[in-house]
Image (cartoon, rainbow over all chains, first blue to last red):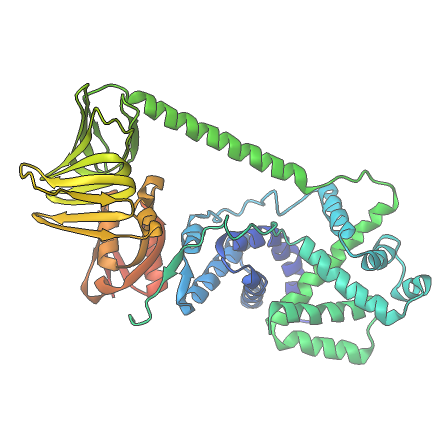
Length: 191
Length: 312
């Protein structure tokens, strides 16, 4: 596949920045429910740009794209979170030093994964443990647990989504009271 | 398609891949991936996580399990606590410095200062403000020469507290309030309690008394008393936190506010002056504000030394 090198690059260089990116979005985007959408769209833009030319400095590039995306969305809304716009300009992401949070040590990585694994629902956890820790095939897992292969497959799908969610760096949601809600309003009749 | 739906589809594909794909399935997956970059990145993201999970194999040998996030949270809390202590220390230092009676206080553009008078009354000076405070046994008199200040007055019936601002005299009747003066224009906002506002040298039979939640605006000899909801009062006083909060003010008015706090002045031309602005900004961060005008409203911004020209 022609995309293979870009796919590898994306997984190696872009995706490790996810916890940082997610927290950036969380700080700057009021609507928690839209964060996954924004993140995915930012990824897609980075990916498409990389198909044409791979960016030299990945982190600033990703954050710049995310900022532009947020601004595009803000412009389309009549109500705009202002802290956002202020904050993303204050945030200094112009240096491309590998950030300590993006590159965790093997030991930390294992702890993160283990914590994520421990949070899975029991059956899902068991499937993932048998598949990933013990290295059994889906078929063997099904046999050992006395469930169908389809069920194993479903649990694998569920497991990877839950792991991804646990590892995306999102902080526990603060209560509405604690967050500042200030809006940048664009008057409808002014154009 | 939302990220969530794409992610669900991607997870199904990866789970199938995890057990082994048939040739037809591989073809279908390739088609799905090439349909949209959104599909592809959703797929790659889960694929990366699933690959990362291979490291869990290390758990086969016993490993000390530790709760991961706790420590980091505690560090953050400690850092916040340290910052608060520093702030408290800085505040205390400022307060200690203003103890003498009969003294001048001034802030430059963009500065703020908190002072405490000998009677315990606290005054916060906003940007570009000059005032003189005199505390004697007979009374307490503050003369606001220019700018804006917030007063949290320790009430003392024996020693009235008055603020002279141009042709206006504001007498405290047990309260927290702010006074803004620009020449002879005076604006008083009452946060708590009551104040009396009168024209200097013109004792009136019934002086104007403004209560909590009221604003007195006087231009020359005209005086207007109006009521304001709490949140608007708080917005008016947001400068005490270094913020400017606007609610549908025109860009011309907003620029004027920013210009009080910054050496570089925003000048808005033409019909851009009428654009309505809401939101909260750091008073000293004029760059962010004009960047926003440019990006958010498509206004053109032209920086010329200390002038920032904004137009459509």
